[in-house]
Length: 235
Image 1: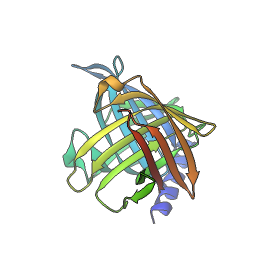
Image 2 (image 1 turned 135 degrees about the horizontal axis):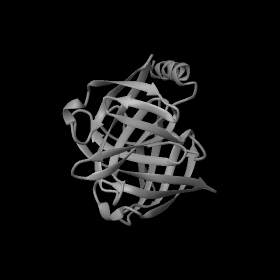
Image 3 (image 1 turned 90 degrees about the vertical axis):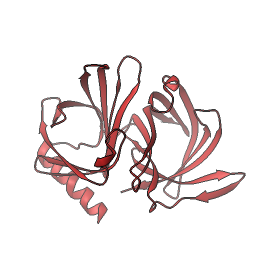
């Protein structure tokens, strides 16, 4: 059913905009205390994340996301996480989207998005859930049905991970920026990190492969700890 809804949503998007909304989008916002903010939205076939962070130093401000849908010009977001308004988790928020010459406007957020990429050239575009880790040669798995989740959502050039709990509505952390995939190497350039702003600007190289549809990801974490993670795509 989820795959059917994703296809129908994409169909309505195409009829509204004449193009696919999948990929990454950016907007500008102004906060009276924080100053100029960059707003980045990554949209997969099933999920969306919207994140605000300061343009001058990458300080994290807010992130929210979940499963999306579109009917006519009504964009819906079934919220799985919200770093500042946890009471929204589990609700379906409705927005009005209007095509513009360079992208689309989203009300009542007051944001005018322009496209960063349409899902290329990176090889990992989509929404993924962490489903396993390898330690001491042994793989331990994690069910995707539980409330505690770590999701990674990527366009063709941008990535973001989010750790959260849909039952307690807790937000545990998020980070993101740009990425590349070349010759089996997945490389992240961090632009924001809610847990440690000092990591902004860091470059993290990893090895990656796709095995039986799962993304195997290994290297050193931002804290310098060896990791081996397995991610499964969500639809």
